[in-house]
Image (cartoon, rainbow, N blue to C red):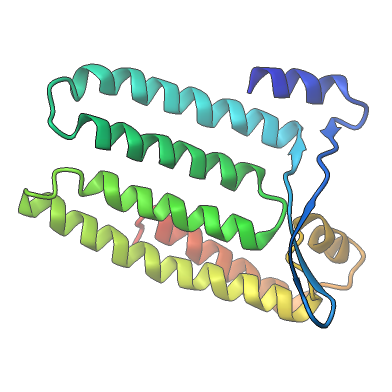
Length: 189
């Protein structure tokens, strides 16, 4: 993360070019690309995510010592970290949503880590249901943006908004859907 931040800051425009890979090509001209955004904001967020994850994993070494689910816990934490990094780096809304859902899955797995305890199992189910409700709003926003613009690409959507092509009602509904996703993910219901 530190190397990425230093590389980004040393690059004119503070953005590292990362070529997209055509992941899915559908008849009719629809192409879904797999790509990364690496600019100064994502570089800083990479540091935040990796440092917080490192601190949690260091603390967890002692906390989880001797627990029979030790390896399962660290596998879930590693998957959680990977999913968070995917959310930070995704260049299109479709892959952002995939990583967003992985974060939700990992939250469910970690909240219900001691699934043999009824409280943990119930808390995991509640968190899973609440995040699904919020994720429905997020998915609706993504689909509304796609059906109104024909793209999932975040940079293209930004360009359309700046150019005034993407305005008014669709932006309002998309913002509400994205907000619902954030509220659901943080279990604010």
